[in-house]
Image (cartoon, rainbow, N blue to C red; front, side, top):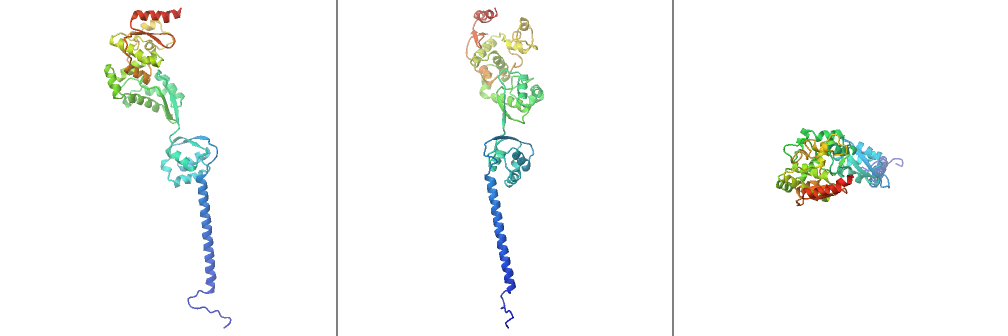
Length: 359
């Protein structure tokens, strides 16, 4: 009996005990490995989410092309040093289900942003905008050149749109019938656009500013002078070109209103210049007598179109001129003007400020 192993019913055989122990050890070991691996992954994820590519706060402007997915966006950001690892950031974007919210455009990032901050910029930040300034008193061609210089399409396209009847009609301006060109209706100001903007975006924005200007109060005010919004723009363009002094605009406007009431010609030099094809800086007697639609020394009333782009201040000056009886003004050669009620006084001032200066 000494060499025979005896086991009771229900007890595992000795071999099974050893096998079970091995299984337990393997399972526990695997669990430990998985736990360690999971802990390692969690640590890596935490490290990725809290890390920045650089400690330096350096700006990066990144262009995101239309249709870019998580991987392409991630690579673009990695190339600019905005994210440290393109593959991991792409996984992060997919984990956040951010793909539908990715937008095309130019965005401003910094090299010390965390991944969540980069994501916030991608989804919600405004695009980087670039300014273009149109000073008061410019013609269409001059505005077009500035738009092109700022990188928003070509001057030729800007000019084409400003004279395209179908395009002008689509703007739904407060002018009936639609004007032949947008001269005087493209409000000068400083505007900001994304880099992808083109000439049409600029022209539409300027025209929209003109539409916005004409609220109910201004429409009613124009009606008290018997003027339409377009006629106000015409007169404002003449006021704009007559003086560079903001304080003088309501006074200049007053003179023109007074002359219109008396059916006097406006006799504005800038209107002569607008109709000259080869203006060389001098107005000659022949130019004053030469008839053309804008020569207010020849025609009565307003020119048929504006002669430049009046600013908001010039438009307001026409609607709210100061009250005077003045009918004349002459340059004092210092940027300001002398105003007169009578021609006799005006003639003396012309002699004082203009004729003596030429001697």
